[in-house]
Image (cartoon, rainbow, N blue to C red; front, side):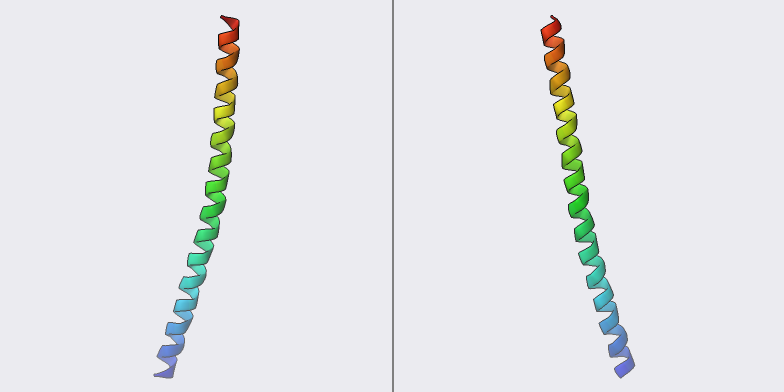
Length: 55
């Protein structure tokens, strides 16, 4: 019976660690995607302003 409890405890720890890892990676991905979206909108704004100035 103790061996089953040991396995259960290890599985809970592994799952908890995986959840924490997924949350950390998701934070990085959201940060990077926000940065890319900001850069793209900046480029689009610059191109729009340049096109309007040429007219």
